[in-house]
Amino acid sequence: MKALIALASTIALMAMPALAQDMRSTRATLSGNGVSGTVTVSETASGMAHITIDVRGVPAGAHGFHIHEKGVCDADEGFKSAGGHLAGGMNHGVEDSNGPHAGDLPNLHAGEDGIVQVEYFTDGFSLDPDASPTISGPDGAAVILHAGADDYASQPSGDAGDRLACGVLYPPQ
Image: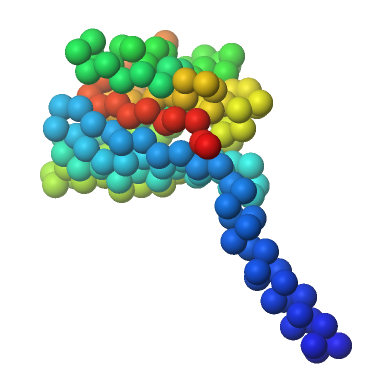
């Protein structure tokens, strides 16, 4: 019996890397206005998205951070090319009774050193291209770091100010 348990454990451990490889993941290089770093979004076994953020050069203070509907980051137009927030049929903000947008995330807080390292979990969107809302459409989606804090209520985007930095989340391959 012990040999059977050991064999089952070995088979389970051998299968784990294959399971991990089946999970979807995408990474954006966030840049603009002296900000640089990465944002990674990975699918979890529970179906939630795991978001990790590691950026430098962020002005001290609170900053809105959102997933936007278009995977386009044209700096010459202030990153307006990324479109609005990934809405998923909802209003903006956790303070709205018909909110939040699928792409609404908590504010990021940068210290005097300009470094932000944080991780979130959300079930607001999926990496599955057949799901809705998804960040894995044919054009991907964008992550936007705003100049100011999101107030979690103002329409359509939380009064978070200009778009400071942008990165494209391409559909996972």
